[in-house]
Amino acid sequence: MSSSNLFTEYSQKLAQFVTSFDWSPVEKLAEMVETARKQRRQVFICGNGGSAANALHIANDFTAAMFKGTRDAIRANALPANVGVLSCIGNDLSYEVIFSQQLRVLAEPGDLLIVLSGSGNSPNILAVLDEAKAQGVTSVAILGFDGGKALAKADHIIHFALNDMQIVEDLQIVVGHMIMRHISAQNGTKC
Image (cartoon, rainbow, N blue to C red; front, side):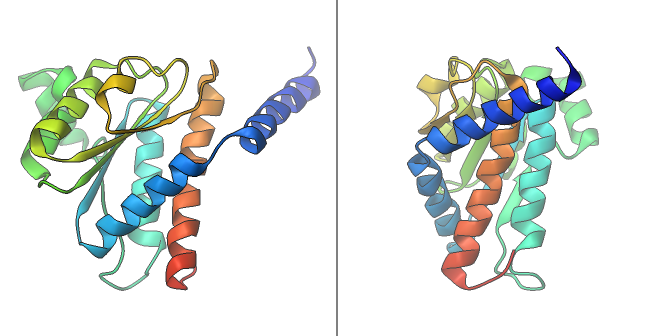
């Protein structure tokens, strides 16, 4: 297959999924994030690999791209952001608890956790979902493939039932940007 055919196939697959997906769970998540913002609750975001990079991107957008120069922004924390903390927890405890240990220390009941996972089966994602439940933190899982074990652990699910990691990761960012647009529109701000 030529490169141009690959690009066309990829873009068509992404466009077809975007136009046919029921986005109402994302609207619900946007409302949850807006409630957390208004109540000055924290929003924790995590994932592995490309999803970790997406967690950083979304946390950056929530904290820095909206409500510039004010305290009105979302109190977002990307749990994969601090390599020192990650490597310390991974070395001293285990890689499985790199997110859950941070949540145990930082979260308060009523905060919000968003996990990004293609498979929904990563041990550290499952552990942080368990910790969220133990801490009284509401959890949302944005998942791909068949959703994995995270489907049964998260309080709320956004499931992109695709066996395509790159498109699933693209859609994670789409969700983050949709939330930004929703909150900006509700508050008359520009993102």
